[in-house]
Length: 209
Image 1 (cartoon, rainbow, N blue to C red):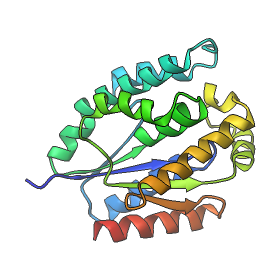
Image 2 (image 1 turned 90 degrees about the vertical axis):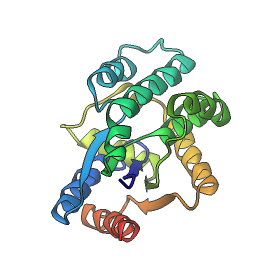
Image 3 (image 1 turned 90 degrees about the horizontal axis):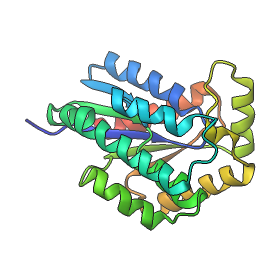
Image 4 (image 1 turned 30 degrees about the horizontal axis):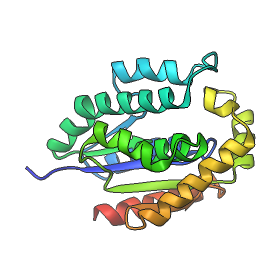
C-alpha cells in the first residue's frame, strides 16, 4: 500500500490557521480524499494531558528546555499512536502544528537554538517529516489583536508572552522558509478568511493532484 501524505499547518498566534485547517479538512473530505485531522500538542489522550501542562497559564516557572522536551514527548506519542498508523494506511494526515513550531517557538523565540531543538526532536520523530507545510503569516501585533477579540479561543501561556517574543517566533518561521523552500508554502493570513482559505486550498489541491 502506498504511504499517505503528511500535511502540517503552522503560524504565529492569531494567524487563524486552526480555523482554516477545519475548513480545508471539510473540503478535502468532500473532494473524496481519505483524510484525518489532528493537532499538536494533543491529538491523543497522553499528548492532550501533556498539552494541559505546557499551556497552563499558571505554569509560569516552566524552564524553556523542559518546555521543549515536553513538546517533543507529546509529539512522539502522537506520531506512534495516530499519525504513523494513518500514513501507513495510505491516509492523508493534516495536523495543526508539528516540528516547525518547536523550532520557531523554543529554538528561536526562547533562545535555546534551532539546531539544539532539532536534535531533541529528531530523537522523537526519527525520519517522519511533513510532505507539505502551510505557513500562515501575520504581523504579531495584528495576530494578538485578533486573539483579544476572539472570546471563544483558549488563551494559553504562550499568548501571554511579550510582543518581542512573538516577533522572534515570526523570525524563526522566516528562517525555516529559507531552509525548506520546497516544503513550506507561505500564506498571507492578513487577508480575509475567504481569501486565506482559497489560497491555502489551491496550494493543497495542487499538491495532491
